Structures are given as structure tokens and as C-alpha cells.
Image (cartoon, rainbow, N blue to C red; front, side):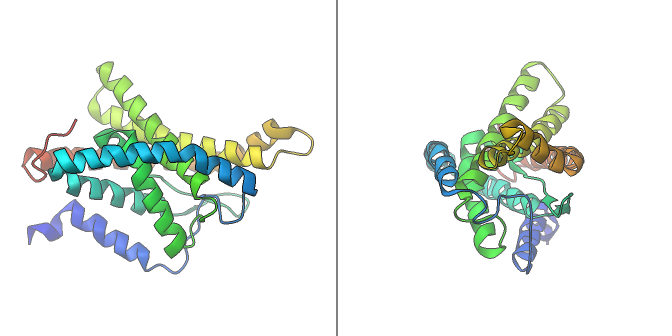
Length: 244
């Protein structure tokens, strides 16, 4: 059947495969890693973006119901990519984020909701991240990453840059900024005894830069390919709704 050959079916299948994994570790800040004050701070900062995303999501569900399938695909894409782990240094791991695709298709606000849902499922089912650190992880991956991706995409498109190139840079830079923010969060929570926040930030950035730059490049390529395929299916009436 045609549905079994579609990219949507393949993404869903891979998500269910990942759900059955016994152990997944990645660079989400793990449960109990942050002091309670910082964990609460990042949660409070994230809540307004989450509420904005809820409003935007309700608007689309009410006025553009045919986009529900595409929103589900964007969420599955985030889950799939962010659940993959690539060994880094010092016993850590890095991973793609996948948030750029949804930010480009629907704007950054919706991704705050999808990102929180993905992070919550990963914390509960895959021991990936944590509940106390959900706010911090959501701010870096589900708030900053999507807003950066959306802004880069819009700037490049207004500058008449090729759409494939625009998607690539939007997804890649959104990925990198997620890790920069995570490094800032860790630097603020654990300042170096001698060099303070700056020395700690440099240390955390150095730990993940080795693997995250090539990962961001790969994520940009994959996102551009998936976006192109979505546009192809949109042209064939699969989603039956205008995008962008």
C-alpha cells in the first residue's frame, strides 16, 4: 500500500522503535543535575512561551484542521532526532534536535508545546533528561532553538536565498544555539571556582562543540530533504493545506 512507502509512516515506525529502546542517554540536562533554584527559574521562564504555543495550536486546530497530520509529523521528527545519541567527550553525548522543521512550517510558538511533550515522554520512557530539569531543557530546545530557526529562515527568504539553503541554515543554527544555551545554563549553575561563569561556559562549549557542529550540519541537510519532500506531498494534495 502507498501509505507504507510514505515518509510519514517511516517516521512513525522509527518512533515506535525508539520507544522500545532500553537505554538512551543524551545531552539533555539530566534529572537532579541543576540546583533547585535554577531548575525553577528556567521552568518559570519557559511557561509564557508554552502558553503562547497552546493558543497558537488551538487556533490552527480550530481554523486549519487539515494541518493536524503535519503537526504530528513535526512532533515525531523532533522525537526521532532528539532521541538519537552520538558519543561526545568526557563521557557525554550529543544529539540533533529536529525543532527547525516545525518552526519553519508553523512558527516557533507551537514548537514550545511539541518540544515539552517530546521532552516529557523522553524523560518518562527513555530516562533521557528529567522532570526537574524539564524547564531548562525545554527553554534551550523548545524555545530558543525554534525561535532562532524561524528567524534565520525568514531573514534568508526575505534576502531571496534559495529555500533549500534557507532551511539548511535555519535548522543547523537552531541546533547549535540550543547547545549554546544549554552550555550557558550549566555555566550559570556551576561556575568555575577560579574563572567563574565565563571559564565554566568555555569548558561546556568546548565539550560539546566537537560533535555538535557536524551534527548540526547533518541535521540541516536532513531537515532540508524532509521539507522538500513535504512540499512535494503538499503539491500532490496529501496534506491539502497551504504551508507558509
